[in-house]
Image 1 (cartoon, rainbow, N blue to C red):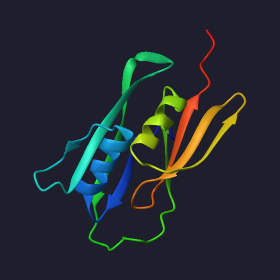
Image 2 (image 1 turned 90 degrees about the horizontal axis):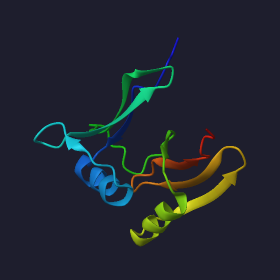
Image 3 (image 1 turned 30 degrees about the vertical axis):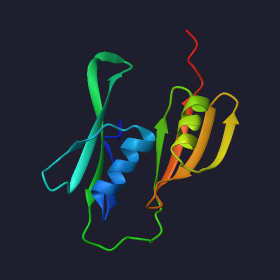
Length: 132
């Protein structure tokens, strides 16, 4: 019944600060949804494999929450794909982002794990290139 992911949503008590980290450290270019910066979003477009004419979008957003979530445990994780893990890890180091662990799995690719400043888990993945 499910045929894709429509979006990934993070919640924050300080949207502007967290969005700045994602922009500066991970390079996610976002737009503010409103003038109060109560939410930001980015769109990741792709084509459907079995029908390349069909364009799909995954929405990514950070939204404000009225609940005090500062310092509270986070249970989700977002997996972001990268083109070159070694290069990306070098950029993270320059930006002062601490990577918890890296691993490579045969047939799957390279992975790295870290947390954003609010404790949200991040998984980076460089997939194994598809053979033509």
